[in-house]
Length: 273
Image (cartoon, rainbow, N blue to C red):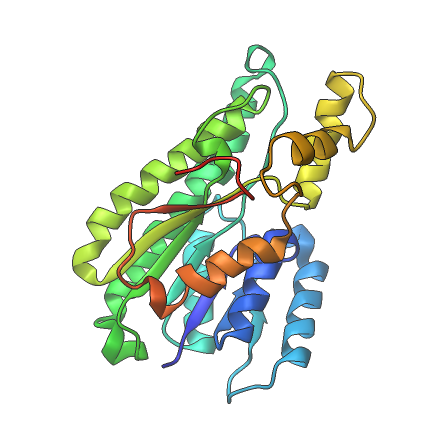
């Protein structure tokens, strides 16, 4: 079994944790993020290649690319396949958040959020599926029963929250894309699933916390603390590794081979599905 993955938005945060878990579990991984994070990408690649022994191919490679460009995503996939072998897993993790009331949002805000969170996922899903189909039967190509595509949704894609309306709408769209792609890809032995993090300690959450506390005249950190204590059943914010456990430990593993079209919630007990 020779598994190769691409994880977009993986220079840090949840994406880096997912990539680390995948390498730990035997994958070779393409670390991707936007070009202006090239230094962080290279640092992540060095860290992974130093920490985990090679099996004859690099455990991680760096490919900066903007997921909003379909041609850039296609080029990233081709470079990954050339250097690491047949693509068996795409994790469309890259995303951005925006904290702004919808009444204040502009057309430019819509374009910015949906370009990354929806079009970016669409580009990764379509280009990955095309590559996987071209590779042929997954057992013959890579020794796996199915190819896998995963996308980053959010608990905001189950119930929208003001003033994160634009972000939440984009994550509803990810769930819809995932369900439709799952149906179209099934005949080609490709499963398509998503994961929905809740409040996870990342730089994105720090930005949301800062914006919300400013809006409500609170102190920095108040939103995270109050939400953790009053809303999250387990009483704490999650870590990137909590998400990586579900994504890398289950959704990317053979244990999920009969799972498709689903969105797995990782929120410490906010939504019960």
